[in-house]
Every structure is written in structure tokens, then in C-alpha cells.
Image (cartoon, rainbow, N blue to C red; front, side, top):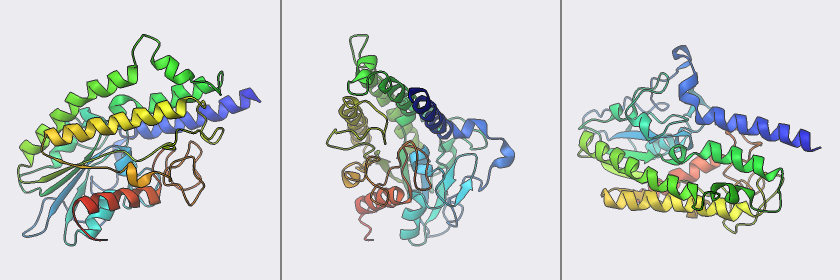
Length: 304
């Protein structure tokens, strides 16, 4: 029984890892869409049309959500940038979000996806940025915590592992990511000096109560609260860096509470490690992308 469960967890963790490294492993011939979201133009603005550029990782790109328009980056034309652009009537969208992106991919190509910052220009009027999760190590955290739970399912083995050196390694990783976010935001402002810049936080992945849901989400009971607090710490850092850079922060955590990966199909907006809806493991499904779009539009004061 234990061997079978370990095998299942291994497959799920491998699927997460595949999504989180999407842009680095797919050949150029697989690229579809030239970095653009579905049906919203070239993204560099024409006349009075708003030029909207979406930067980010797989939480932005929408892996496995139909319809995938860029295989290299696991990008959907129903991700939140596409939904936001549809509500901003007449907006031209350039969506260069890419699964597996870190802050480094703002400056360097990722498979067939060019450096994301290259999509910006002085004509850009709106930028959304959702990045930092892969810098902290979302994929490796999921693998480590799911694996640790096998030997101590009712304890907190993941928290003990990340605190074994006397300090919280994930807290340190978040702190180390902060100056990288500052650098990205500085580059965005320089390349798109007239744009409104919106930093998008990450949605509620786990129950806000801290109560687990083994075996549906295979983390140890005592690690759910630790991982919840780690995500909140990441979002708080992003909010602070946005404020320091005179950018707008969008809280997607609060409006997605109660729709985490422990909730039932149809209710949840984040899929568990074995998804029931078209989405990557531990990622937003179509409803989750809709929820993030609604949060962005609310901060932009666009009525749904």
C-alpha cells in the first residue's frame, strides 16, 4: 500500500515539476502564438487602444486549461490576462507569461519565449506581473512536503525539514526573492514609463483554516498551516514590494479562500495534485483564472 501511494505521489510531483519548467524543455517548433494571448492583437498599441502586457509564471499562463495557445509556455487563451483584456474593450494584449518562469526569465529567453521584459515599450499602458513563486521554489516544496508526509502523516515533517538548520529556509527564500522583485519592477517602470503596473498575488492554495485534507492533498496534517503561512508571507512580501515601487497590488488570496484544493470539484478553484478539471496540479483551474481576473478588474475599477 505504501509503495503504491508513493508511486502516485511521485507521478503527481513529476507533473507539477513539468509545468514549473515548461518553457525550458519544449522545442521551438512546438511554440504556438508568438507570445500573444488569444485574439487580442499585438500588444504594442494602435492609436487609442490600450496596450496591455502580461508578465508571469504558470499561475498566469494557465497550463492545461483549454484552449492552450502556446505549448512552449503552457499558456491558455482563458487565463486571467485574456479575461481581463476582454473586459478592457479595445485593449491589445501581449501575454508572455510562461510556465516555469522565475524573475530571471524577465531578462532571458525561456525556450521559444523571448525575455518577458522585451514585450514592454513606451506605448505600454498596463502591465500585470505575477512572479516569485518559482524563485521561492513552489515545485520543490510540493515534492519535499508530499514525500515527507509518507513517513509522518500526522506530524509536521516538512516544517521540521525546512527549519532543521535553526531558521526557516522558506522564510529566507522569500526574503531573498524580494530584491529580485524590486529589480523586475524597476525594469518595468524604465521600459514602460507610462504604464500602470499591477502586481498580482497568489490565490489560496490550501485551506485558510490550516486544517488538512489527507489523502486528497498529501501533506502531513501539521504542515498545512505552515505551508499556508508560507504562502501568506510570500504574498505579503509582494504587496510590500509593489507599494515601494508605486505599483498596485492585487490580493487574489482573500477572494479565493474557501475554494482551495481541499474543496470539492465544482467548488474549488485550485486543483489538487490529481486534478479533476483541466488544469495543472496545484494550479488554478478555469474558475480560478476567472477569480483572479475579477480581482484584477476590481482593482482597475472595471465593473464585471
